[in-house]
Length: 210
Image (cartoon, rainbow, N blue to C red; front, side):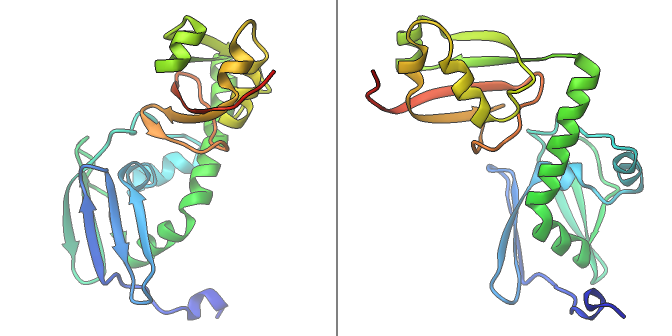
Protein backbone atom coordinates (compact mmCIF):
# COMPACT_ATOMS: atom_id res chain seq x y z
CA UNK A 1 0.00 0.00 0.00
CA UNK A 2 1.48 3.37 -1.05
CA UNK A 3 1.77 6.48 1.06
CA UNK A 4 -1.17 8.04 -0.75
CA UNK A 5 -3.42 5.15 0.29
CA UNK A 6 -2.56 5.74 3.95
CA UNK A 7 -3.77 9.33 3.96
CA UNK A 8 -7.06 9.78 5.88
CA UNK A 9 -10.15 10.83 3.96
CA UNK A 10 -10.55 14.59 4.13
CA UNK A 11 -14.18 15.45 4.86
CA UNK A 12 -15.14 19.14 4.76
CA UNK A 13 -16.36 20.81 7.92
CA UNK A 14 -17.90 23.67 5.98
CA UNK A 15 -19.16 24.28 2.42
CA UNK A 16 -20.38 27.72 1.38
CA UNK A 17 -21.40 28.89 -2.08
CA UNK A 18 -20.52 32.49 -2.88
CA UNK A 19 -22.98 32.90 -5.74
CA UNK A 20 -22.18 36.52 -6.56
CA UNK A 21 -18.43 35.83 -6.77
CA UNK A 22 -18.99 32.39 -8.34
CA UNK A 23 -16.86 30.20 -6.12
CA UNK A 24 -17.32 27.41 -3.59
CA UNK A 25 -15.58 27.87 -0.24
CA UNK A 26 -14.55 24.59 1.40
CA UNK A 27 -13.18 24.36 4.95
CA UNK A 28 -11.34 21.32 6.33
CA UNK A 29 -10.73 20.12 9.92
CA UNK A 30 -7.11 21.28 9.90
CA UNK A 31 -8.25 24.85 9.21
CA UNK A 32 -7.39 24.88 5.51
CA UNK A 33 -9.83 26.91 3.42
CA UNK A 34 -10.01 26.53 -0.37
CA UNK A 35 -11.94 28.69 -2.81
CA UNK A 36 -12.85 26.69 -5.92
CA UNK A 37 -14.21 28.74 -8.84
CA UNK A 38 -17.46 27.47 -10.33
CA UNK A 39 -15.76 27.44 -13.72
CA UNK A 40 -13.06 25.11 -12.38
CA UNK A 41 -15.60 22.75 -10.83
CA UNK A 42 -17.57 22.66 -14.09
CA UNK A 43 -14.60 22.24 -16.43
CA UNK A 44 -13.11 19.45 -14.29
CA UNK A 45 -16.41 17.73 -13.58
CA UNK A 46 -15.98 14.04 -12.65
CA UNK A 47 -18.90 13.11 -14.90
CA UNK A 48 -18.00 10.25 -17.24
CA UNK A 49 -18.47 12.22 -20.46
CA UNK A 50 -16.30 15.09 -19.19
CA UNK A 51 -13.51 12.74 -18.06
CA UNK A 52 -13.52 11.10 -21.49
CA UNK A 53 -13.20 14.48 -23.17
CA UNK A 54 -10.22 15.46 -21.00
CA UNK A 55 -8.49 12.15 -21.77
CA UNK A 56 -8.76 13.04 -25.46
CA UNK A 57 -7.26 16.47 -24.79
CA UNK A 58 -10.52 18.38 -25.25
CA UNK A 59 -10.67 21.71 -23.41
CA UNK A 60 -14.11 22.94 -22.32
CA UNK A 61 -14.48 26.63 -23.08
CA UNK A 62 -17.03 29.38 -22.58
CA UNK A 63 -17.71 28.62 -18.91
CA UNK A 64 -16.26 31.83 -17.45
CA UNK A 65 -19.69 33.00 -16.24
CA UNK A 66 -20.95 29.59 -15.08
CA UNK A 67 -22.62 29.42 -11.69
CA UNK A 68 -23.91 26.71 -9.37
CA UNK A 69 -27.68 26.33 -9.17
CA UNK A 70 -27.87 23.70 -6.43
CA UNK A 71 -25.72 21.44 -4.24
CA UNK A 72 -27.22 18.14 -3.10
CA UNK A 73 -25.68 15.62 -0.68
CA UNK A 74 -25.13 12.13 -2.03
CA UNK A 75 -25.23 9.82 0.95
CA UNK A 76 -22.44 10.69 3.37
CA UNK A 77 -19.61 10.52 0.85
CA UNK A 78 -20.18 13.07 -1.95
CA UNK A 79 -21.98 16.08 -3.42
CA UNK A 80 -24.00 16.46 -6.58
CA UNK A 81 -23.32 19.91 -8.02
CA UNK A 82 -25.88 21.27 -10.48
CA UNK A 83 -24.73 24.12 -12.75
CA UNK A 84 -26.84 26.76 -14.45
CA UNK A 85 -25.92 25.42 -17.91
CA UNK A 86 -27.91 22.27 -17.07
CA UNK A 87 -24.93 20.03 -16.24
CA UNK A 88 -25.90 17.86 -13.28
CA UNK A 89 -24.24 14.45 -13.72
CA UNK A 90 -21.04 15.22 -11.81
CA UNK A 91 -20.80 13.50 -8.42
CA UNK A 92 -17.96 15.02 -6.38
CA UNK A 93 -16.74 12.59 -3.74
CA UNK A 94 -14.91 13.98 -0.68
CA UNK A 95 -11.67 12.58 -2.08
CA UNK A 96 -12.30 14.20 -5.47
CA UNK A 97 -13.08 17.60 -3.94
CA UNK A 98 -9.95 17.54 -1.80
CA UNK A 99 -7.82 16.52 -4.79
CA UNK A 100 -9.27 19.43 -6.82
CA UNK A 101 -8.62 21.84 -3.97
CA UNK A 102 -4.98 20.79 -3.78
CA UNK A 103 -4.42 20.79 -7.55
CA UNK A 104 -6.32 23.90 -8.63
CA UNK A 105 -3.22 25.80 -9.77
CA UNK A 106 -1.59 22.93 -11.68
CA UNK A 107 -4.91 21.90 -13.30
CA UNK A 108 -5.44 25.42 -14.65
CA UNK A 109 -1.86 25.69 -15.88
CA UNK A 110 -2.17 22.39 -17.79
CA UNK A 111 -5.51 23.50 -19.22
CA UNK A 112 -4.13 26.86 -20.38
CA UNK A 113 -1.20 25.19 -22.11
CA UNK A 114 -3.56 22.80 -23.91
CA UNK A 115 -5.83 25.66 -24.91
CA UNK A 116 -2.88 27.64 -26.24
CA UNK A 117 -1.79 24.68 -28.38
CA UNK A 118 -5.36 24.30 -29.70
CA UNK A 119 -5.50 27.98 -30.59
CA UNK A 120 -2.27 27.71 -32.55
CA UNK A 121 -3.39 24.55 -34.38
CA UNK A 122 -6.96 25.64 -35.16
CA UNK A 123 -6.53 29.32 -35.86
CA UNK A 124 -2.97 29.69 -37.06
CA UNK A 125 -2.99 33.08 -35.33
CA UNK A 126 -4.50 34.44 -32.12
CA UNK A 127 -6.69 37.50 -32.35
CA UNK A 128 -7.62 39.37 -29.18
CA UNK A 129 -9.53 42.53 -28.27
CA UNK A 130 -7.94 45.14 -26.00
CA UNK A 131 -9.90 47.84 -24.18
CA UNK A 132 -8.13 50.96 -22.90
CA UNK A 133 -9.75 53.01 -20.15
CA UNK A 134 -9.45 56.49 -18.65
CA UNK A 135 -5.89 57.88 -18.83
CA UNK A 136 -4.71 55.20 -21.25
CA UNK A 137 -7.51 55.87 -23.72
CA UNK A 138 -6.80 59.60 -23.59
CA UNK A 139 -3.05 59.23 -24.06
CA UNK A 140 -3.24 56.67 -26.81
CA UNK A 141 -6.20 58.21 -28.56
CA UNK A 142 -7.70 54.74 -28.63
CA UNK A 143 -10.46 53.08 -26.60
CA UNK A 144 -10.25 49.61 -28.14
CA UNK A 145 -8.58 47.57 -30.86
CA UNK A 146 -8.48 44.04 -32.25
CA UNK A 147 -4.99 42.71 -32.89
CA UNK A 148 -3.22 39.50 -33.89
CA UNK A 149 -0.52 38.34 -31.51
CA UNK A 150 2.91 37.07 -32.58
CA UNK A 151 3.96 33.60 -31.43
CA UNK A 152 6.25 34.96 -28.71
CA UNK A 153 3.39 36.68 -26.87
CA UNK A 154 1.98 33.87 -24.74
CA UNK A 155 1.19 35.46 -21.35
CA UNK A 156 0.12 38.85 -20.00
CA UNK A 157 3.73 39.34 -18.96
CA UNK A 158 4.72 39.05 -22.65
CA UNK A 159 1.92 41.28 -23.89
CA UNK A 160 2.73 44.53 -22.06
CA UNK A 161 6.41 44.80 -23.21
CA UNK A 162 5.30 43.94 -26.75
CA UNK A 163 2.69 46.71 -26.72
CA UNK A 164 5.33 49.13 -25.40
CA UNK A 165 7.43 48.59 -28.55
CA UNK A 166 4.75 50.27 -30.64
CA UNK A 167 4.74 53.83 -31.90
CA UNK A 168 4.30 57.17 -30.15
CA UNK A 169 3.02 57.21 -26.57
CA UNK A 170 2.85 53.46 -26.01
CA UNK A 171 6.07 53.00 -24.03
CA UNK A 172 5.40 55.94 -21.73
CA UNK A 173 1.69 55.27 -21.32
CA UNK A 174 2.10 51.62 -20.29
CA UNK A 175 5.13 52.18 -18.02
CA UNK A 176 3.28 52.06 -14.72
CA UNK A 177 1.07 49.94 -12.52
CA UNK A 178 -1.72 48.43 -14.57
CA UNK A 179 -4.96 46.83 -13.50
CA UNK A 180 -5.61 44.02 -15.98
CA UNK A 181 -8.66 41.85 -16.61
CA UNK A 182 -9.15 39.06 -19.12
CA UNK A 183 -12.77 38.35 -20.02
CA UNK A 184 -13.79 40.61 -17.10
CA UNK A 185 -11.75 38.67 -14.53
CA UNK A 186 -8.60 39.92 -12.80
CA UNK A 187 -5.52 37.90 -13.75
CA UNK A 188 -1.84 37.60 -12.93
CA UNK A 189 1.08 38.43 -15.20
CA UNK A 190 1.79 34.72 -15.78
CA UNK A 191 -1.73 33.97 -17.07
CA UNK A 192 -1.97 32.61 -20.61
CA UNK A 193 -3.60 34.55 -23.46
CA UNK A 194 -6.00 32.67 -25.72
CA UNK A 195 -7.44 33.60 -29.07
CA UNK A 196 -10.72 35.49 -28.65
CA UNK A 197 -9.81 36.92 -25.23
CA UNK A 198 -10.98 40.41 -24.29
CA UNK A 199 -8.27 42.20 -22.29
CA UNK A 200 -8.95 45.45 -20.43
CA UNK A 201 -6.15 47.76 -19.24
CA UNK A 202 -6.44 50.53 -16.65
CA UNK A 203 -3.46 52.64 -15.54
CA UNK A 204 -3.45 52.79 -11.72
CA UNK A 205 -0.10 54.51 -11.07
CA UNK A 206 2.25 56.20 -13.52
CA UNK A 207 6.00 55.72 -13.77
CA UNK A 208 8.27 58.44 -15.05
CA UNK A 209 10.16 57.25 -18.09
CA UNK A 210 12.19 59.15 -20.66
